Length: 149
Length: 168
Image (tube, rainbow over all chains, first blue to last red; front, side, top):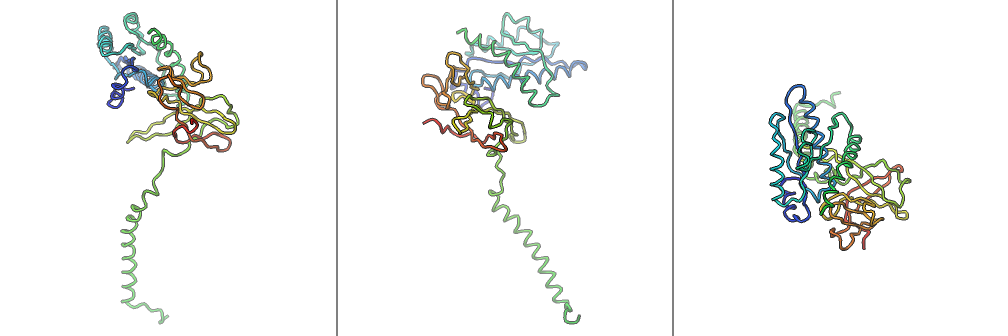
């Protein structure tokens, strides 16, 4: 489910079943040498998140992307975000990102880090198979957490 | 030559009839077009989509078949890839929608090692029999949807989804 009016309505009716929140963590770098790379990362994270959403629509709510400038990175914010989501009733919160520096708070919050794959020059079928491969990496992380209760 | 002489009066009446005819046609044609418009509408949703799977390759074991089509959502066009689980039941080809009837996750064939030969939804452990019938005691409340199928030059074509017709 996405964080929009329609899906939130069904979320409210099915709160017992939708117990997982996914937050894309996005760093924006506007410096001229990195802006393109930054764009490719966003493209990848958002494509992968939508793909995860499509597969597990009934169990997770995808939050709007949590974005920040690379220079304004604050390690506290994802933790506070997580606390808020937990108190709103989500049992599991996952952050998904291409920025490796977030893995240093991986002990405190669930960070799914994946290296960005530039998708822009691929045609649709290649893109789909790449995303399927990446999804296969993410599924075990979700299912181990889901199996813990 | 003199028999065919056109008088000024005749010439004017011919010209006026001609021009008047055009003007009337110009008004009537759009009216007619509006009146029969529903017949001329394109039916985007109802078309069959060709897949890359050959009919001859299908077996009794369900396989995942991708098919994509263009979806227009207001001004936003996107290429949507959809999936169907396709298998043969005798001579009949059956294509089931992978969308779980509980909350819309993607079900997987043989997804749960404890229950082989069933469709399994990883989100809340919903299960379906091979014909799409939901198994009582698991969350889903209805059977999986079914797609219309057609054959074209030996290749499988998938049409619009409909309610499951296999479950009695």
